[in-house]
Length: 199
Image 1: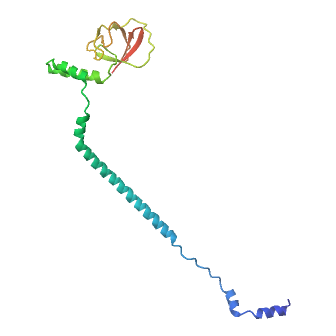
Image 2 (image 1 turned 90 degrees about the vertical axis):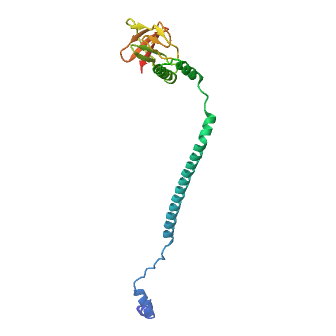
Image 3 (image 1 turned 30 degrees about the horizontal axis):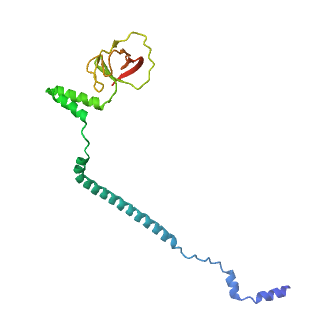
């Protein structure tokens, strides 16, 4: 193409095309996005409604529990009377025997001892030495009797009672014992050394 042909080709271009090509580019504006705002509003509403539902169900549950407790309290005396356990016959007989004493202080002391014996250790072996009660320990001990015994148990009470005097046990008589000095006594019972600890 010659220069002349190029000039003629350019000469036939409309002026409005030239002006449009010379104008700055206009950016297209994006349409606004409304769905993001809607999603955030919907999420807040769900959280709020969920909290209200949980609060109401918790309040309903507490109110229901309160009403059930009140209903149970009204029925409790009748049901308790129906399910009351049978009295413990050995304790009643022991109480009847103690009632025959007549002395109020003796009654109180005996009732305390019988309560202790029935509640505290049941069938635990016990020995009293120098005014202190020692109860059998579950520990296994290695004891060597390298000295003479400190004494021999000379008195015994029933298996379910506590000893009341020194050198007395609730498992028999004739057993040698050694006071070890650290709130413990070792008793030789049938060839075995058993440790008893003060309570």
